[in-house]
Length: 209
Image (tube, rainbow, N blue to C red; front, side):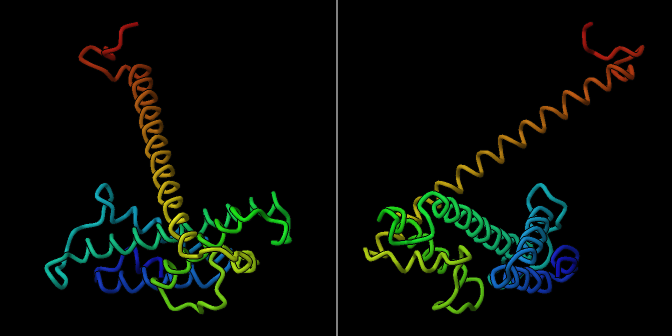
């Protein structure tokens, strides 16, 4: 599946492989989920504007297969990003408040319930899942979500806003990390040019000593 998503010359085959990887990821536990998630992220990098994927093939409505595949990859990777962040947040809350939902503050139960409902909608939009049994944050998170007796719709709206903020924060950190990596690479390259005398004519590096 990963190979087909990355290298198939047919965009429909790539789309089918992407959908299958997302389905396996959402229906499976670790390490299979992580393996599929990594494959989806790699495929997304390959078809990103800065990647090597070629725009080829028009689909319905004039959209290229490239654009449709890139959109689906973004959607599935974003869903799994939310699933992983939600799972980490639930575990942190359980470590803080204990294993008995009856001892949790209402605000924390509301957060878990809201995240559960939003994640359930995202996951069920990617593939068929048993809504009455699926726990997108893993473990016994559904027990804690069901323990919330307040307004689930309001909790879901609040959680959705929180998740959007988390995604934006993660994107900013990723961009900052790429900028730091780029600056470090530039410094290393300049140092190597100077060391090897690979600058201007006569072996000058173009950097004053």
